[in-house]
Length: 274
Image: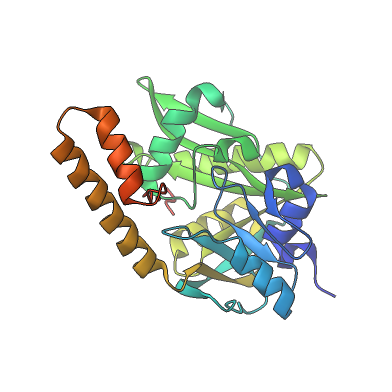
């Protein structure tokens, strides 16, 4: 029988339904929270339900699971890789001096730092998934780390990133240790993921007391017709832009012509370890 850690995305979405879109067969995080999704199993109905959760256009979902990834009909894998799943094997001590709790007021800076350093999918409301802490140097957010997926007895350490201007100071280690220690104080098991190729991150976490539990299969999926959909969307936008240019400064006329020309539906455009 599989462990909840073998399907961390599914386990998290089951335990936190307020974060989820979907139903009993497949779920995904709401698009402004995260890009992870999961099917309950590899049955035809579950895979079909997962495919329905991927929107037309440039939308993508990430799968992360111990079992091999089965790509649902109608979707394609644009990336596939493996990661290690690690769990804290001993109590972790942390130096929390100078660390700050981050929240909504820091959301824009957090998103900017994550966009720059790419610690994994991090969107406008990813910071609401758990407790995040950071360190400021000269008023700038130099590094941060926090919590992502969670289910009974388990919390994931994630979002660990350091601005390039402040690397080499051990900030990622300090923040990772602090997040891990806080999870342990709540009597939960910290776990995390790192690409198998990211040997520096794996070594860092091993030095903190994490041990590899298993290998995870990761895939990024999108609709099989995504390129045609994106091209159609761009063409539709070019038509709208051309109509607006011809309409000059008459915004009302431009909007009327744009709706008429597009059928009323204008297409819209979508680890760093120290």
